[in-house]
Image (cartoon, rainbow, N blue to C red):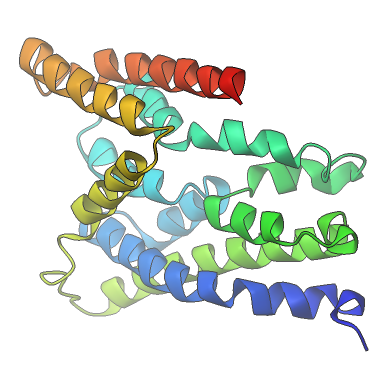
Length: 230
């Protein structure tokens, strides 16, 4: 029988690479949250209701330092602003899906989008069972890994001395990835310059509140410019 008749099975097979990646990153997040003093339940709930990947890593020091909620909001928005843009391409596939549509929009991560957009065959492009399965599986992977990481850290001392570089390295890779793209290179450099200038002028306690709105504005202008030249 054709794989088109087994959307759930195909969704699982397609999501295996995500399972491996989310397994490592999710457990690391759970351990870091535990080491920051947060319980397993709170850690699991943040992954369940935020499902924000890299932004959740950023939340850890912000929560610990009682950062202003506006700064937290702007930071998360800047990290996940790209979802607003590539999410537009999913408006047609998500059209008319009823009650599951809000969840599909909520669960549209980079990895989920990559899987769904790679399925060019019409039946899969609009197969709501397949789309829901991919989104739900990826969500389950992330939440489960966060839970496991939190449990491991609460049951025994988990050393992250060899993983301490993960957060910094992750954002360096994201920055280098933007530099490698002609369409986002200029906005990445402008964002870096904006952040450095804000840090020097406003200091480490306030520079994010000033620089993030500017970075978001730069991203929006850059994206509009890209569409205009397309």
